[in-house]
Image 1 (cartoon, rainbow, N blue to C red):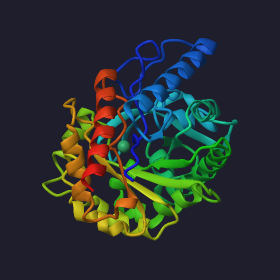
Image 2: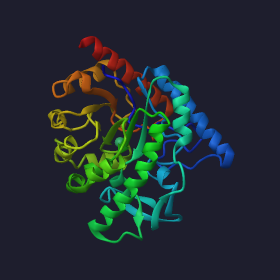
Image 3: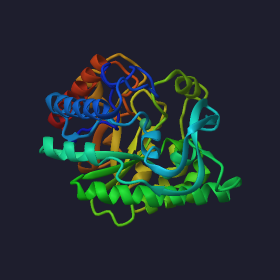
Amino acid sequence: MFATSIAGSLPKPEWLAETQKLWPQWKAEGDALRQAKADATLLWIKAQEDAGLDIIGDGEQARQHFVHGFLEQVEGIDFENKVKMGIRNNRYDAMVPQVVSALKLKGRVHAMEAQLLRAHTKKKIKFTLPGPMTIVDTVADRFYGEGSEGRIKMAMAFAELLNQEALALQADGVDIIQFDEPAFNVYMEEAADWGVKALERAALGLTCTTAVHICYGYGIQANVDWKNTLGHEWRQYEKIFPALAKSSIDQVSLECFHSHVPMDLIALLEGKDVMVGVIDVASDTIETPEEVADTIGKALKFVNKDRLFPCTNCGLAPMSREVALKKLEALAKGAALARERV
Ligand SMILES: [Zn+2]
């Protein structure tokens, strides 16, 4: 009961990449970089186990960014000529690569990390991939055409590639494959209309547990500013949860602690496992076990205890290592306290 995990990313050590950045520059190249990525992955597997987490991830140590890490292995994308684009409905600008021709995987994307993870922990393992709609929102298109028709076509093309990698990850021994779809909270109608279908295409044929993570973004200033415009009740989930409840996806990961998401929206996910965000990623203040257990207690009014999985609100990538480690420990201790209370 209350098996704990992180949403996905963890801070990169300063010998691997620039710290506290969303798109950090690597500190090495070639074989030295490959080795450093593997070393950092191992380090975080151990740290998650030591903290007492139940489901272990790779901490996304081998990818520069949760979307672009995947895109680097896709043929048909021009990484040499990035362009500035407003992403998440112009919430902030990012330098993004361009889709210039038909898309195809160059080969495996995450074999190294997934196999390391499987070889070095006996616990369940979770692996994250970007969702199709969020990819479409984090890349410039010069091939699929304007308007929603082009966006849908491109999303389905990415979903096929994601599916290939997801099936390979499953064969590597991954227990839970999670697609990250922060874009669902921005384009709610499109998400319900075709985003969930693209997600199901990405998960087609998987027999392992499938999950989707929908958050209000990393704890960066642009997101904090955006959240301040959303009012005292954040009801974005209300528009997308019904479509997800009807979908084939098994688990939904959402933001709770310190958010203005009304807890009763969880009831819209009947029949699904719910990964409840009990750790704030936009604050360096470490949650107490009591706070974590209290959030779990509030969520329990709307989801059965066997379906509740305590998690972080989002990835911890832009935080300091020290803070991230303490937050992992708080997550595990809070879940332990919640088990006692139940
Ligand atoms: Zn997130």
